[in-house]
Length: 487
Image (cartoon, rainbow, N blue to C red; front, side, top):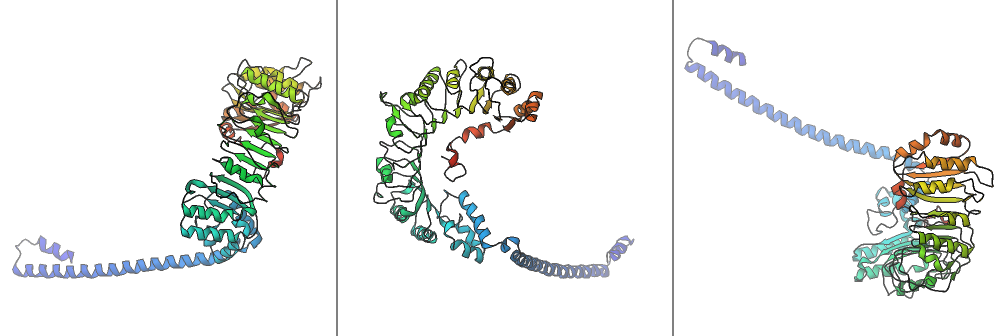
């Protein structure tokens, strides 16, 4: 058709009436053809859309059928339950009334999972209240507690909405099961639950509390681990406590009340205001692990069983106070952690000397100020009175721009090579650095490589800042690996 139009245009004559009629008829025919083709395309497009929808439905059906044969569906229920239990630990402290959280969301997967989850009390043993409450949430918390059966509960309550009636009703539901509490973290100061007992409670964390709250836990015979994250005006807790941490104590407290638990094994004391100095000595026979923020608290303490001391030394008076405490206690430290310091010019040799026989593990922070003095102090092996002569492990937080070779390696080498005079050879060196550069410098040293070949265990971590932030854990090795190990 297009050729006909070309021939017409090439004729050397004007168009006549018949030509015009033919052209108009051709245009009408073309328009009709275009309309028909477009309608056909629309039909094909509709068919393509329908085919795509059908394809998606078939693919979804194929996925559903394939999922029936998925390996996870062939796992025994005991294995699935173990996997779900691991999820429980990672979700602890997240709102139990959120259907998008554990364990609710597991029941959304399939009928088998829903039956397994809702029939497994262990998965419902963590209860966390931390939201605004409605009547629907009250039903959810009752169902949650009902699913937990009779097993022990781990409870977390954030009292931000404690004055609202529905919030108090939700807390009443949880407190009605206080006989099943195994651990509790309470961020509240409420006076309405004084009548409850806690026969199974082993671990307790209290925030923002007063005497009325902590006194409630006198009737908790199984309570062993306590973390107090605020300042009570008095401390009255179960006498059976073995591990306690006082964090953020801003009020002045009598030192004697901090250690008034006869079975105490470990204590952490944050920076606190000291009352007027007491002349009476605080004596405790079973305390073995102590972490403090202010060495001044040692002035009136006497702990003969102490094995692990963690403290900062930022001035000379801290050394004198610590030395007097160790001399008075006549304890045998095995592990000494100097978390901050000592600064340049502050000599800690007296502390290392008095514990020279028993000390096996030393933790220090090396920075620009104390780098040289600490290394020289520990590398001095010519004297008959070698500092920390039985030291087996040195752990270092290396916060210094000097290379790790030089003085530090000479210190390690001097103690490694000197085996006479009763000096115990190093067994382990642990270093936390800020950059990979320091670690590479250390491992490239020929002296270090020789010591490693001869048996020195060297462990390097590029985690200085992370380590500084993660120091809040119980020191007692018996707490390692337990849910309550972190403070």
